Each structure stands twice: as C-alpha cells, then as structure tokens.
Length: 149
Image (cartoon, rainbow, N blue to C red; front, side):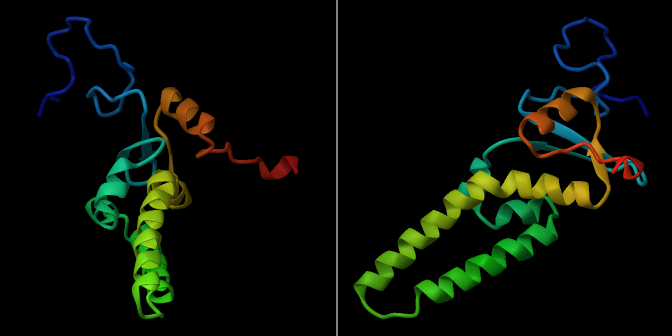
C-alpha cells in the first residue's frame, strides 16, 4: 500500500524534515521516537502538557502509558487521602487547592515522564531534529560509552 502522507505529488511544499519516518507533517515542538527492536514509533509534544492539565489521568490512558498512569494515580490517591483527613471547610479548601496544584504539576512534568519512560524501554530519537529538541529540553542524554568511564 502506498503511504498516503508520502507527498506523492512532489510539490516541494513540505516544510518538515524529509527524513520523517511517519511521512506526515509534525509541529516544531513535537519529537518522534522509535523502538529499533520492534519498529514502534511514538510522537509527542516536548514541553508542558496542557492536555494533562485539562484531562488529568485520561492522557496516559489514551497514550497506553500504563506505567505513568499508575504513578500519577498513586500520587493522586495519596494526596487526596492526605488532604481529606480533616473535616470542615478549611480542609475542603485545601483539598481543592491541592487538586489544582497536582494538575499544574502534571502539566509541567507529564511529557518529560512519558519520554523518559519510553527511553527506559528502548526508544531512541528517530531523527536529528527530534534528538536536538529532546536534548535541548533535557529529556534525552546521549548514552555514555561503558569503556570510557
């Protein structure tokens, strides 16, 4: 089957990386990672995750990111239990601010957590543009050669 995103009409309007493994345009703040052993490709944003702020635990569910889903759910449950120990209005206010605070924390760190977990299970940047983007955001660090310690 022919790649529908392969720019078969050859009109030279593709502003993105021609070596893009997906063949489709990728926004400049998105990185592509690939697992060389099984060929899986993942594309995600580098930087704050506003979807994690708005949709909280649904984001790792839709990305099939079960590891980070369990981490986030565990933190949410522990924080919810700690903030709801007391009764009365001051504790309800603390619970509300705590849940909003966790939403902001997930917004700031979820994409980094997602990429770091992908790197731990064998994914690497798919192209030079993604590698530069991930390195500049401090998500990716070149593996050290074990012989040069």
